Image 1 (cartoon, rainbow, N blue to C red):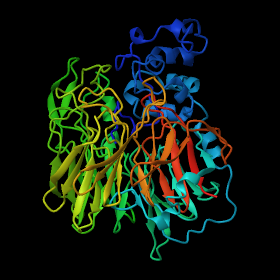
Image 2: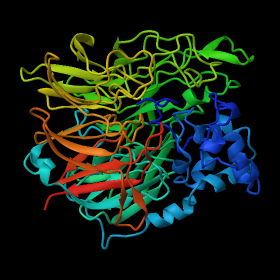
Image 3: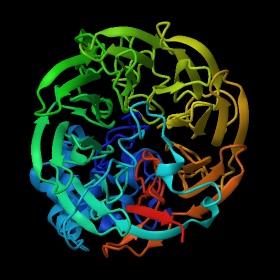
Image 4: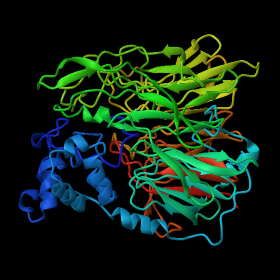
Length: 628
């Protein structure tokens, strides 16, 4: 996934964009008389927070000019503390530098919802009785459900068969207090599921009822899926996860008690978007950043972040090695306002690393460079030695891709690199799968809309490539794909706007022969209304999941569907874009399904609903479906 202005699935708590950035000047604001939100604002100076909002924020948040910025309604779902954090140390710190601490507080009080303390208090509602006893191995672990990131679930662990899918009913909904998005995909055992949240609270919920076993408060938002480590008896022992501040945590799975935490940030804008992979006593942590947004500001000296992967000792967090996707940046001149420029930079790793036990390798997908010159490791699948982090091979599918938030129609252009895109990274992790003839291949999907099969035994040589979608800022292939070894299932987003897109949009679900790349079937999903908005688009940005011959996929318009894996026949659907009565009493509403995919485990289907970036539909619920 790419952490960028156009593709903010990896972004922090909110967008509070200063009015002079990204072309969101007062002149670009919509006509006040035509907008009831802004009508007559010149006379509403009695609230200093509102006056500051109108001066520094409304040009983006109350306008269609900056499609990346959440609407004012989405900001109201944020906690005030989250807004202040974003303006002070988060993704909007460059814009927030124009405000004093008092002004940040006033803006937060005007735009935000409950404080962080209120959110934490609400998190304790609906406590489970007794003590959590974890007795068996996980039913769904980490982001991809296995070390190969296939998003494949066995029929036994799924507990929902092909004939059961049409009978699914909502069993319970959990409301995430203080959040405008639900993007931390849960890890699931028979007794509990574990997930993070935008306010930084980690939850252990009862798998069947949604009551709260325990909570842990991290220092910042946790957007990745927790990874469960087993003890010697094969029972869940520890949870590993990373937060927005690039801190890695280990907590006890049964109680939430902290075992250790460690900052792994080596750049002020560094963060963790992808889930951590645990294997043989080591943690493999992907590193991304928000510097792509900092570049929005003409006064920012762009850019110096280097994407990478690091290996930690799982017992205490000690760093074992660190790999960077670019060389050390050097000064390359000045931008048009006299600020120093640096490069190369960027090539972040947005997604979960994939383990190859047989070859003792780890595979990662990289994003675009942030500044010139573009290098040979951006937009690539890279194989590293598990023990040392040494590069074994690199397969780069697009050369010369450098892009940041200063580019594009509404960008300031000052820090835009000369390449200016196409911004077609690998936001989805590579899938390692085994064909029927025993041959291992790597399957990779790109924001360009292209899908690839690569040979791990021949330096990542491309075996076949197929265009599955036209490509776009939010995909093409955005967050992931799924495979059972025979078929590759590809969700396509194809949201409009990228000048490098090719062909017509193909929003929907597509199936390909994993061995040859031959197209097997496609299920194109039409928009549900005429407007070009996310409430209309049946764009599949979140990854699909395959379980017992059924593909589960959620769309940006909030629709969750089940399809037959054999031919794409729709089996069941539900609209999550509505209000829900929640088991913990928190006001709950679903919205866009993005970033986190459906999880099928133990006879239940879990899905996160609500995403506040790119003018998508905010929401704050985890939904649990089952059969009677």
